[in-house]
Length: 463
Image 1 (cartoon, rainbow, N blue to C red):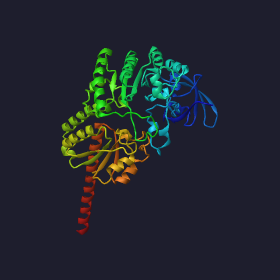
Image 2 (cartoon, helix red, strand yellow):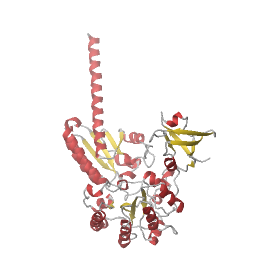
Image 3 (cartoon, helix red, strand yellow):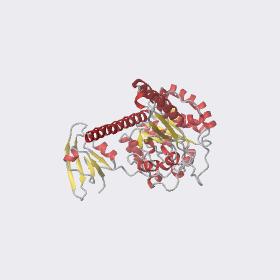
Image 4 (cartoon, one colour):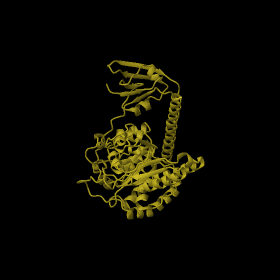
């Protein structure tokens, strides 16, 4: 029998009182068969529920539940197996991975459910009428859609797949059902830029506000493309020229639509050596997880941290601390400036180290794709001070491993220093630095206390 496999039962919950256990399968709610957690949330919103449950030993239970409005049953379920991607995108990052990584990294997913649940970008190239009807009926909003180009022929060329529904037709149907969509374009110089790009932007802008935002992200190329199609990387001149044209046009679009709509990825400004726009121009940061607005947000938070540190007078408190902070090459200059100022304010010595990406190649410079072995290669033989800070974006969430499966313990063993994972924000770094210093001071106090007690004991013994 199908259903949702119970992963966890919250202590003290209704589910625990009903003796539901991990490994049981929730088959239906109020007569509706459950395909995934979306169905569970949709059909399980009533205050009176009839649950059909299959126990781990195969026994079938029927449970009636009455609960207070908004009260949770206390169940969590195993994540759904994602639908596999059937595209063959010319810029697909998975196709550019080196050999030897853990197998899940080579899995390409293309699942509108994960777009709704987790904000994953999907092309909707595998969607049909049944899936569209479900999205509209169950109000699966917002969705995150990789458009790349609205011209049907060009889009099929980019996705490496023919016979797909025209994306504008799909999105217009979703907009008609008042589904909110955030969109992106992976910009490939010479392919979907120029007039094709301008057409795509205008097509999507016409569907505002249901198309709520559009991010432009430059194509990412690793050193492992092999026999893949030749693509032109983002250059300094191209990035500067693109910002010069589309930075202004983004402002005009914002004025026309009444809010920011078109966002250029941070990498354009970093590569082009162009100052970032004010943080306010990014609105409520709808594309932050897509690498849009991360540096402006970092710079804004850095000023707040420095102001707080100055206000608290941390110079006396942190004097003598020596800490190394690792980062990717892209954000290095911004992190280095912040840490230099933070060191001056606090009296500590906080040193950033940009880690070259040997795993993926020199063209990959973002922090989130730095692996453990590359950190070791960059840091071994250098004076690391008392502690090494690693940003959390380098780690696989919930598993504590890097992309190459190395652990923090591996780093500590190879580097001979304690390693701490921190939130990759100015506040995260500041908290880690201050807590480390307090811990060090407490350790010194404890050692001094023990030393003093031993001296007293020795004196008594002599007397």
